[in-house]
Length: 176
Image (tube, rainbow, N blue to C red; front, top):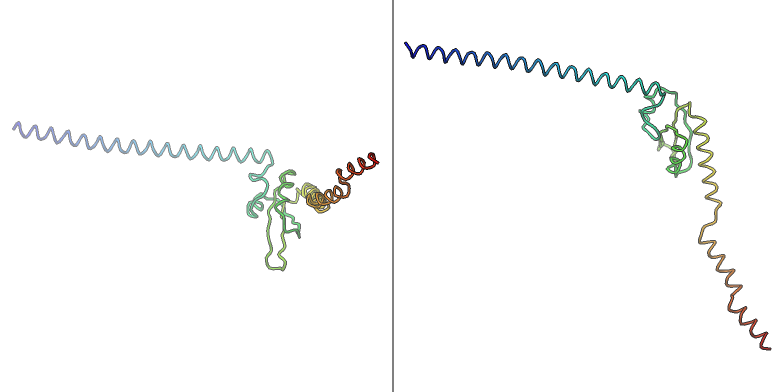
């Protein structure tokens, strides 16, 4: 009889342990789900606050050179300019200076390929100012003499007026 009682006590302890384990498991799952839900709510609130701040500032999330998709997502009307110059990379310096959001696209269907600069319509004045400065810089660069040409001219002039020859000529005249 005592063996039966001990077996029953042990079985009761085991069952109690199983019930406690199940209750603990459900409680932990409920706590984890609640923490996860609160974290998602917090992240959603943070994202909403960031979006409101950006809208208040009136600024786009991306600045400068960007993809056409990102430029279109900003909800502004787009304008474009066709570029004939193949070296459009140097334009980027001036676009950054004037804080222009733009996208470069190359149309390979025509020969020679054409380049287009797409930008927001509200940035028209900034883009025209950037292009004026860019073209002015390019024209100035083309008109400028190369350093090699300047050196060759200086050598020619120096050859005509050789200092040693003048000194020799002066000393001969003095000796006569």
